Image: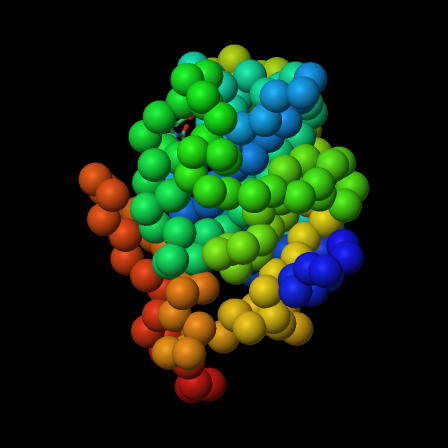
Length: 193
Ligand SMILES: Cc1cc2nc3c(=O)[nH]c(=O)nc-3n(C[C@H](O)[C@H](O)[C@H](O)COP(=O)(O)O)c2cc1C
């Protein structure tokens, strides 16, 4: 995308964006409406083609637009977006546009045109919804195929996260409850035994 500092992430590396369980901002759009909500429960489920799962409560506006629009974006906020992330998970888009209220400025995703957040985010995965009638009848889990992904190269490049003191604002958020997040920061490199 023009003027974007983000770099495309090869789809076979997309799972690494979610491997460590960051809280995400799920964005959706359909019929001229758009929305964003927080989700702590998302994960990769397949490598090729890359597929993900995210729990989206059936009562949410996000779920309504996800189904209507046939897709969603998992945007991975950095620590500087902790307040906006908690707020996006504490009110409904049915009561007003959360992008405007929270100062989030999306751009159209490259494949599906869904709202992609970059400023303050570490990465995003644009996903085509994979309807699974049996699962959805029993659970709130939704599946998607990742059709495009990109990351801020300051924190994720060549398929690897690099969490350093100088990119602390882009360290991912991990919800502990009640708006308290742990920030992914202290890493340990395993050595061959
Ligand atoms: C940090 C955080 C994580 C959340 N994780 C999830 C989740 O994984 N799944 C879910 O359905 N709701 C989750 N929620 C709740 C939704 O974000 C919340 O219901 C939101 O208001 C729905 O907005 P919407 O109606 O605009 O879609 C979370 C909320 C917060 C604050």
